[in-house]
Image 1 (cartoon, helix red, strand yellow):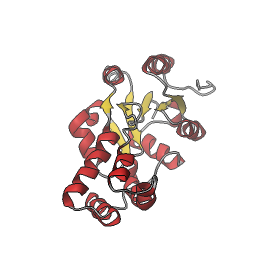
Image 2 (cartoon, one colour; image 1 turned 90 degrees about the horizontal axis):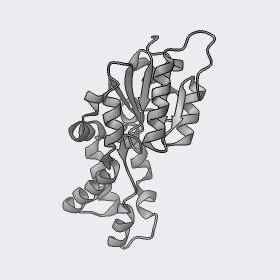
Image 3 (cartoon, helix red, strand yellow; image 1 turned 30 degrees about the horizontal axis):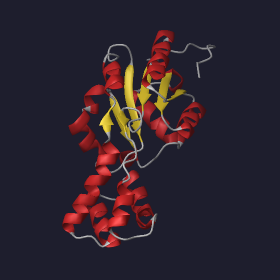
Image 4 (cartoon, helix red, strand yellow; image 1 turned 135 degrees about the horizontal axis):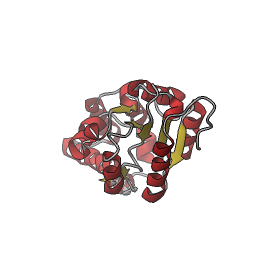
Length: 212
């Protein structure tokens, strides 16, 4: 429980995930007003993020709510996953891979049903870190403090000995409230510097004030 730990987000951190405009393209293709796709699919997107719906059920809901045949449903979900998965942040992934002997490593990700299988196949995150906690598998999303607690439990570490890295300020704030040290990802250079400082400091001892 006294091990130093680094926990990272995936999208926007380990994956580079710029918006591709795929939803807008589908709305134009289907001659739907802007915002219609997410309005019709909002509860499905949420259900997928907390694992209360299967991938097959997502496909069925996409087809029904948007009026798509089987081929267009497959094309729609392919576009969804293309943006979701983005491209690997190779520099940061390579750096993290070199930390395996120095600390416990974890991932805490707000995810979507089907993410583990795809990210394992493409990016092998299961070999990069010790534990991966996906929101669709635990039924809890960041910034709920229970998500951070679940990550610490899975890694068998104390929150104060963890550095959490995310590209969303609300999640960084929530991690600090939970007792973690946290860093807002803006670029690789500053993130790598912050991780190095965390590892150099070592596990927290009683009375020591953690870095932000």
